[in-house]
Image 1 (cartoon, rainbow, N blue to C red):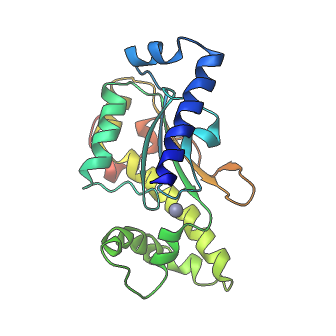
Image 2 (cartoon, rainbow, N blue to C red; image 1 turned 30 degrees about the vertical axis):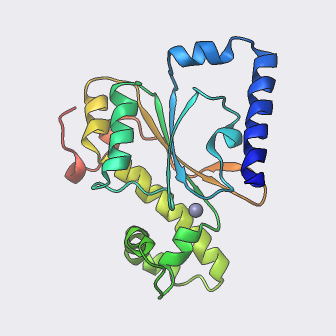
Image 3 (cartoon, protein in one colour; image 1 turned 120 degrees about the vertical axis):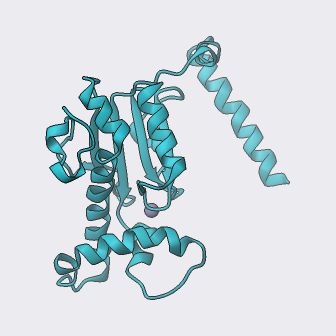
Length: 211
Ligand SMILES: [Zn+2]
């Protein structure tokens, strides 16, 4: 239990440090949260959402899973997105992948890992639909990294196909969807998609509401 004691010590030091800067920080935060951003990122321990973008508790609504997937039947992710848009009225959804993602790597291999195989299947489909672009890349690391980028782009598209996202646009709510990728090697973020902020950016086939 010694290791867990360290976590509690760290926690007390962290809370003290924040209170030293702003004595009423936690009292104010307890009353409400009004984040402007929803972060959809990978569960990888090396990609901690708040730290990367320098945001404090209360400033970033976060959903993380293996390889930052937005699956149209995943009640968990859909509930987060719904709550973020309808109740919190967040203004930006950021889908953030990272280079060297283990989930993406698994999707390129012909082997089983267990339950996560079902989840990774989503990325396996992304690879298969883009195999012509990817199969020409001979360097394994490079191929994984390109698929990491393509996966972010696909997940951004998946966000935009969700009815609650389209309803927000149709009702004039300000909402922008961004696709970013993070490099564990240099700690830097890169923007890899153009911002999607209206129904006009969604292919007709996926539109489920009128502008
Ligand atoms: Zn990952």
